[in-house]
Image (cartoon, rainbow, N blue to C red; front, side, top):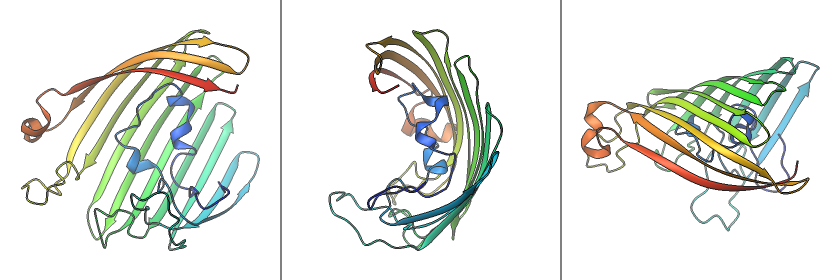
Length: 246
């Protein structure tokens, strides 16, 4: 990946993680996405790689620190972090990758902490509208603990109009209580999310389509979190999505 301009994406995590076929019509980002993606926006990235018929190697140098909330200004580029990724595509239906990265103080909420991040994922897609992914990540704060996450998801186009999608994920998160005065601040808790959804796709032309749909989600967490997050938290999403291009 090498993007023009000051904004880029290093070679880490499942390739094009936020634009994958297994979540083509799922409007919600995974609760695990900070374990899998690279720094969302970085000022300064250089990527080089080599691609063969079935495999590919990539390496990047980039600025590890995410920008502040004033996104309209350009911050000083720096190549203080790095990442490597190996991808393997044995057939047109299967894709696999493993990546590792060092990020220099990526989070403003954890000043002075660097991060080592390792991910692995397997993607599957066939000619009958089914796309699926299984992924694992380990985020090792330095200094700090290692937090892991799992993600499984699928998108199934049943016909020209009807799509089913779903996701199951589990993550160890230590940022559920940002208040430093809380006795649970910086404690890691295992949280799971289960989501299922449906979308009706309506072609509006050769290069324009509209999708209308919704999803339901339920969460599982330790009883310690009941007072803050509820005993049986759940949620729903209704959406309309207009797509341009084939």
